[in-house]
Length: 134
Image (cartoon, rainbow, N blue to C red; front, top):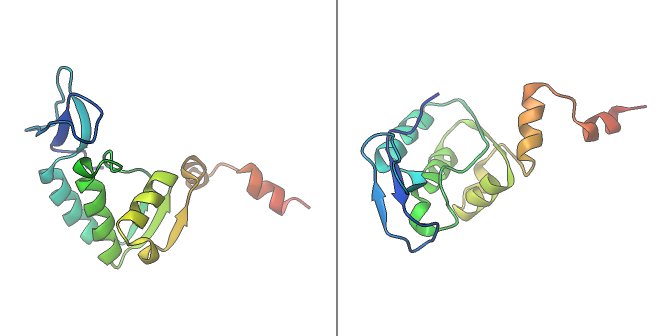
């Protein structure tokens, strides 16, 4: 697992808020992390270009605000251009790949984020059990 190396931060949750990029991983004081930073965005893009299978279950920033969408948009576009089998789990990521114009490049899309995680964890899902119960 690779953790972010930098972040885009602000002091208020708003699309037009003034933003700064951290040097390192700390988000101090009254600041809010709104996106991964450019170093992390490039690093994640490089890692994902080599991936064979990706299960993506959450956006990397507040992609609904254009100012804080770079990390999520970049990852979506890298995955859309990759040869990896990409599985999307969760409504926010579904919206993000549609917004980035790469939804048709994904192998599977599910709006059930929590259910997707439980399924790959091996838990029985009530809806699936009901379908197979005779």
